Amino acid sequence: MEASALKSMKKKRRNLLLILVTALMAVIAAGVLCACSTANDEDQIIDRGWVHEVVYDANGGSFDPSIPTQYNYVRVQENSLTVEPGYTPAGAGALDIISVPTRSGYDLLGWKQVLFDAEGNETGTAEEYWDFKTDRVTGDITLRAEWAQRGEVVINLSIGGELVPLETTYRVSFGASFLSMLYDPDAYGNSVVREDYVRSRVRTQTIGDQTYTLLSFYLDEEMTEPLTVENAVYPENGEAQFNLYARYLVGNFTVLSQDTLSSSTRLMSNSNWYLVSDVDFSNRNGEPAEWDALTSFTGTIYGNGHAITGVDFRTRVRARELTRVRSIFGVMSGTVEDLVFEEVSLTVWSGWFDDTSDPKPEITVAFLAGSFDGGVFRDVALEGCTIRTINAEREEEAQRGFYCILADDNWIDGAGSEESTVTGKAEYTGNTSDNMLGL
Image 1 (cartoon, rainbow, N blue to C red):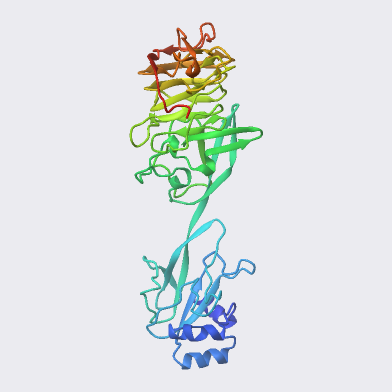
Image 2: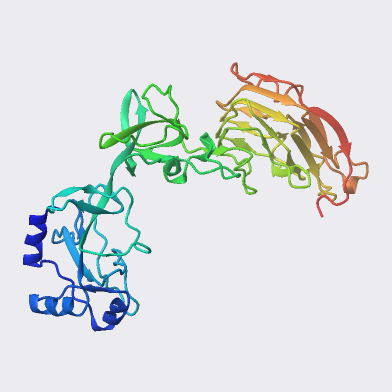
């Protein structure tokens, strides 16, 4: 601020802060006193030792948004600290001596002392920010707010050849990284840019009646330059808007990896999964997770070449059984694509005691699906998978189980689709007895 402007401000004494009695002693003890409302009062304050004036220049911001106020000031004693904007003395309640200024579209970085030559002409600002905990005042000074402009990060989806910006946007300081706004760190605290670490706020977006699951982000509309730790920085001299472009799935998907796997995660009839790594569902002791086999599947699993391991799908056979085919997916109406089932088992079992009035149920077991209703297995592989039965074909009539017929393929003959491509077969390991099952 030029000397003439400073003189004019001193003459008008605008925006003077009146300190409550309860706060006054705390402020005096700190060596800082706000100017009073009349020139005579201020003269008395100077005579008592409050000799130096500290002017706060909001530099385009305002101390009071409702009444634009660019300047504020306090008086301090020789070689004392000055008050930091936002400081509230003990016992003053919500009172601020100097409030923190605001400026739309900017972040406050700190305060720098304005430098003047011998004639009072401004020559620039200090290189370092003023340290309100250590720097002391030895003469009249002006502290000027330093700001960093914030731009808006906008995420765009390409839907039907048209770019659609999301309502979820972020305000970011120029030159600052915005990676943490889009990605969470992995289990080791590293900021790894991968699909399974997209933050929940932007993970799913609804546009019209359709939900989209965002997977990863790119700097260009053609999606050839992925967002990385190094380039996730708002340009220093950028424009007010910075565009990102998102790769997405149509629908609401759970993005699975071993690092983000939850103990509550299990395959449901309407599960939509997108794998970004091999996923082993075994517990800490290495025992496979026990999930109920499905009667039908309407969801979608994109394996991306990864494997699901450590699962035992279980299905119980009861007397007067209506469902005569047992499999992992039941009636297949969904899609499973580019996935490996490794060391996954299907267990079909019966309790000890069933109603003896009916003949034993005759159950057909197919590993993947019992029938198709528009669904498809595409590029699915089976490695080390097994089928086993427990308590089937009991000799004692009162303790009988069921008759088991194994399908020749991974599903019932004639039920497949022309798109179904499955390599490998599940091995039948035979029938065993277990007295605990069904109790």
